[in-house]
Length: 148
Image (cartoon, rainbow, N blue to C red; front, side, top):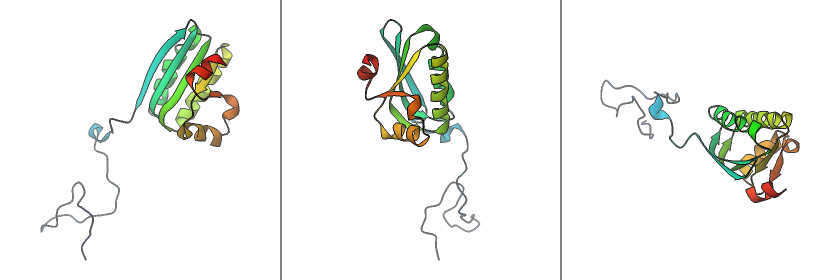
């Protein structure tokens, strides 16, 4: 019986002396296996004095959470309001949730308001499942967050 699957990396096409296929998961070889779409993009605007809007897109996970943490934490001491626009986040992992909690706590300790602008289920659902809705001031969009 032949295997209907295509040969994977390191497999041969069945020629004599070749290797047999196993069901082991493929191994990552290095940086070329990293999807360029993975990662985080962070943009900031200052719509008014003392206000910063941080627009986040991409995947917010254990690899990118430190980037968000650094980008926002550096701005907290110099503003009165931070709005995190999270509709562009494609994935929110537990490390991303932890980063949001840490930023909220830092803002709270320094008297800065932190609001979230987001309607995407892929962001709001993990927040809800973790029981964190009560920690965040969540709005449908950036104008609503700015005007509340």
